[in-house]
Each structure stands twice: as structure tokens, then as C-alpha cells.
Picture 1 (tube, rainbow, N blue to C red):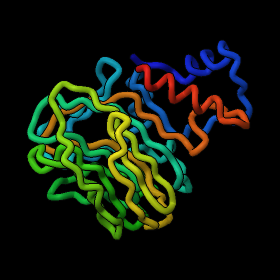
Picture 2: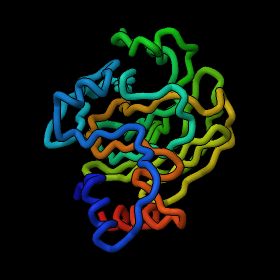
Picture 3: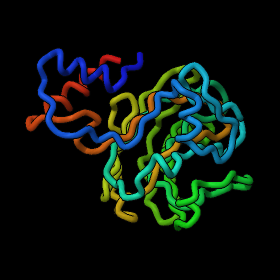
Length: 239
């Protein structure tokens, strides 16, 4: 069940939790407004559409990517948590969760659409967490443009099952979670951790929902003892 940030804040206030400070939401999209989603995302390849408050990719082709638009990303952000829920609808593989992306993405034989203007002038850097890759046999972060790949695991992706995916990115590392299980931490200082996020697929149709990118203090105002951050974690665990 989806819970808006406003709903969570009201819950916190109801239970008497103090809210001091500012929210650190860098990007969010729950796909409840197709016109707004069109402004926020730039599809580079594939068949992307909004349906049922979800972001669907309906092509079984390879290298189907959609990236956040310039107006919704701050290039200086290099410490963030990226959360998204994914559901594989069909096909050979799983999810490609993009992060630390700069410049023009590797085309891999495709005539990619124009990138956001700022990206066109950047040196290429591209990471994605390939969940259920290699014919849905295993998972791993892949990187191009000088990044450090890794985080090998045996995770595969079932069809028609929702997964909660999280990447905690810092200037010196990235840490990966799936369904609240910590998979790996990779030490990586490439370009101080900068670069935007996106979603993608490879030989798979999939749907995504509840994209949220927030800073180290969490998506809600935090009191000096961090109580709201704790409440946020409890609410998300009950989804």
C-alpha cells in the first residue's frame, strides 16, 4: 500500500513525535499523475508509459532506460538513498536499477533518444544494479566510465512479485538492499559519488512504483534524537 510523505508526517505528529529541521527529499514520483511523470523522466530507449500509478516498460528489447530529467536533479548531490519498488511482468531477466549516471549512456547498438541537456556535456559514467541478469541466473552491479563494479550475489527475480530495492550512495561507497536484506557494500570514490538515478530493463517487461531519493537525514524532518527517521523506518516496514 502506498503512503505519501504527508501521511507519514501526520502519523508522526499524531504520536507526538517532534519535527525539527528540513526534509531531505531530492526526488520522488509515485506515478499518480502521468503529465507530471512525463516532465520528470527522459526515456532513452524502450516503451515507457504510466498506468495504474506505475511506470511500465513494455518492450522485451535490451537496454531500455529512463533517466531523471535535468529540472528534477541536482548534479551536486552525492550522498543519497534511492528507493524503488519493482515488479517483473515477463521476459528473460529482472531489473536494472541505475545510479551514479553522468554523460550519455552506453547505446549498446541502440539509437538512444536525446539525453537531458546537462548530461550531453558530461563525461560518461554509468552504473546499474543488474538484478536477475544473465538469463535470471545472478545479480551484480555493472559500471562503465571508470566506476567499480561488484556486489555479486545469487539473487534472481520472480515474475509478478514486488521487490523493495534500495541503494545507499555516498562519496566513498554504495550499499545495496533488496527486501530489507543488505546485499553488499562496495568501496568506490569515483567522481565523489555524483550522478543521477534511473530505471531500466533488459529483455524483460517490468513495472516500477514509489521512486524516492532522499538525503542522509531521511525524507522527513528529523528531531535531534532522530525519532522521525525511526518512525519512517517502522512505517515502511509495515507496507
